[in-house]
Length: 212
Image (tube, rainbow, N blue to C red):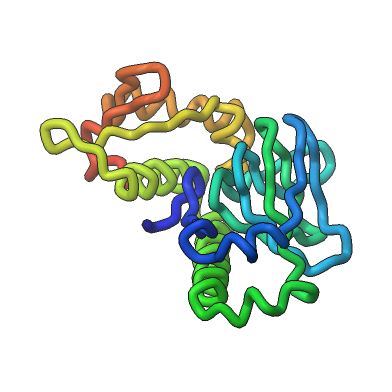
């Protein structure tokens, strides 16, 4: 599955590791609202259940990199915080203590592939932040998400976007009022239309692609 910032690629440990391997893994529980940072160890966090967001937080502002849910993997580091949006359970895999797991070719390949996808996703985020206007960043985000979700009705993309304007602003890296104005402008021009609480239809994909 191709990664999107709303739904990144997964690693299903149940299809890779044995029961014996599973029994050796530590499970850490987090409450909704907990924040987690790097603790000095080289640990993989593989989500067993729940939901979180990986974000950069500074001077009272947050920038959301992507959401995390069951089977997603991340390595916490100093510049990125994990905020838990639901009560969650995470497998902790210390890369230094569990070297035997990395002898499992399928496991090590899946981990490397997942981290590669994450690096590609983050480089794409940087490109959007550096080289695109706020209008273009929003248009690109909507198009990429809709294309990957690939839900269509009468040939038009249906976008399942369960995000508030505030959260969307944190994804885009722009002020809430600016993002709200741009989204309202897209609706006014009938480029997109809100058809349900969390769903939009893209009526004019070509205009959205050229939205500047």
